[in-house]
Length: 247
Image (cartoon, rainbow, N blue to C red; front, side, top):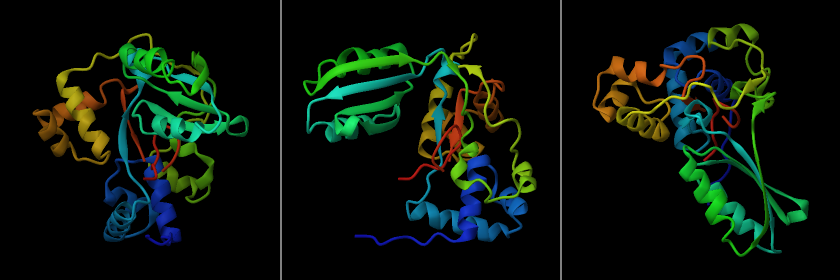
């Protein structure tokens, strides 16, 4: 069994920087943190290889016209661990938690389309014998949260000036509708770019272009063509729209 992994102060600062700017170059991150580019690259690769962090690209369902749902399941005794584990493996489930002394499972879903949502909420869960009751609530407006770099656990790891150099701006909590009035329609190239970002949120534009079979400029334009509500965001440490996700 692999032992514990030592995380040093500079590692924490790099993780925080990746929360703020998951796709920033090693050079840009190094300049903000007052480290050498080689140090940032070496430490990032070690953290990634050790399974401490993983930067991934995810779809914003609201930009595609799909809402997010909060789901509460009342389960038979002894079944919650298996149900929670199965939900946690799904790409359309954000997080899973146990509640009510281990008799309920709560989760948040963000389906890519109506068919995916109906498969989970309308078919799979109702047909699961261990699920006794289902309550599902559509999120209409978001009153707090948003970008993951406002996750408080690493607050203070960088100075405000360093965070500004990495692109941190705006209030941490903003009220906004979950579903946009003008949803994006994904093309075949978009789907290929999403597939590449899901595997590696820091994939270069050249790699994204190769995956999509288009030019680097086209892949950049496609990924960020909706600046007010981008359909693809990059996640890097543990929460929100830009976080680093533990393996």
